[in-house]
Length: 117
Image (tube, rainbow, N blue to C red; front, side, top):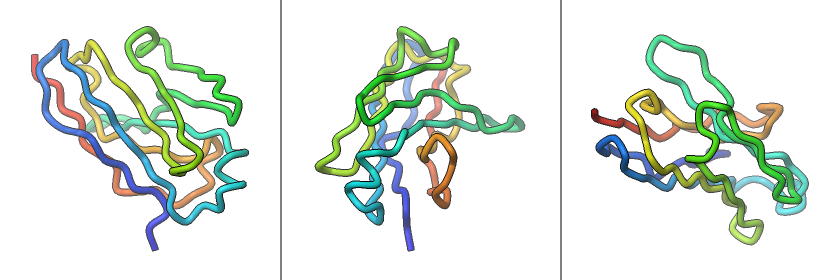
């Protein structure tokens, strides 16, 4: 029973862009609409870290390391959140996940982002 489905990762050169998507097919729409959703990432050998979060009112917050480069958005009708990543750097290489800001859902499989220098 899949709760979160991430996609859109890939291999890009430094300076490139990717757009990640995360669907929450099992969330009730009203629950999704009220949830503060977030993107996380986990690089090899490191702990998972919060990258961005967005309230139902579309107020977004970003980690300092991605401010000005990443933009989070959400589509309530599709129960989907997005992460537009521009000006990618090798240090952005990680597996990216989405979840509620309280990590209340089972984790998805994530999507691998690899940035070559």
